Image (cartoon, rainbow over all chains, first blue to last red):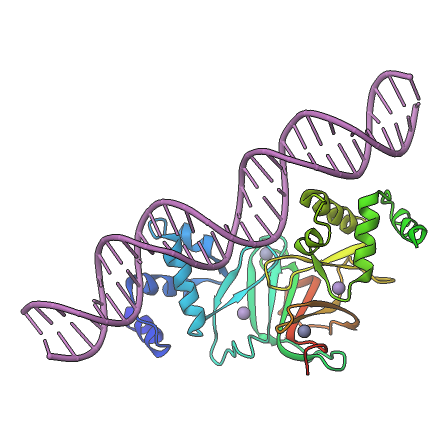
Length: 137
Length: 137
DNA sequence: CCTAAAAACGCAATTCCATTGCACGTTTTA
DNA sequence: TAAAACGTGCAATGGAATTGCGTTTTTAGG
Ligand SMILES: [Mn+2]
Ligand SMILES: [Mn+2]
Ligand SMILES: [Zn+2]
Ligand SMILES: [Zn+2]
């Protein structure tokens, strides 16, 4: 329970404040990636900036990673075991055009990409848009 | 010269106004994708909104396509011969962390990607970040 | 336990980019 | 040539990210 969450934070050198524990707990429950706005809706009393900085801290400490799904709002999802958020998450992200949920697909790795001579890759982001499993009737 | 540009626009059913010809000409000169801000800097006298709508029209008519490179500002690049901007450009885009230029790599196609059961892909975007050929000393 | 320093937090304000509304001049079309 | 459609310019708005700063809470040293 709460202890587990605390440990998880401390392992990443993040001090376990009340807000952070709540945010972490929320993130763990999600099946889809969440935006800052989503968190604001979840915690109506919490301050937007505090949530913002919580996410920023989580990301800096490698607890979560961010996803650009083309909606304009950045989404966040927990890193998995062995999630290499550097050279960066090399797994696929999926945006559902129907329910507009964004999914992390950590089991689906990005295939090797060939580039022109002289271009040195450091990070790769692959976003697939389509219809998710919940929306394919 | 100008005639070529006019033809290019008319072939896509875009009326060749002075502004549009200038923007098209500028786009043709670029080696990297350009942002709205870039165009504003190029044409200091032109109105931001006019440039915005010019890009929007160009995109709707399939003259250019947009690129999200994670900088927050959308970039635009001319479509190539046979550029399938629907089901969407399936070619690779490259963002240089050094010079911060964004490149269209129309010759480098996005490899087929496997997805979990029930996920139906419709469009795929692949962004590689790293160091471009101009910046690899 | 007490205190100074560090870390979080809350609120206001700003920045940046995208987008819309509307009036007006120009081009197209019947 | 008059109405309609289109393009343009300017003002204003919207959404998201980010910063500044004073206040509160937590941590660490004595
Ligand atoms: Mn992910
Ligand atoms: Mn491209
Ligand atoms: Zn869905
Ligand atoms: Zn470069």
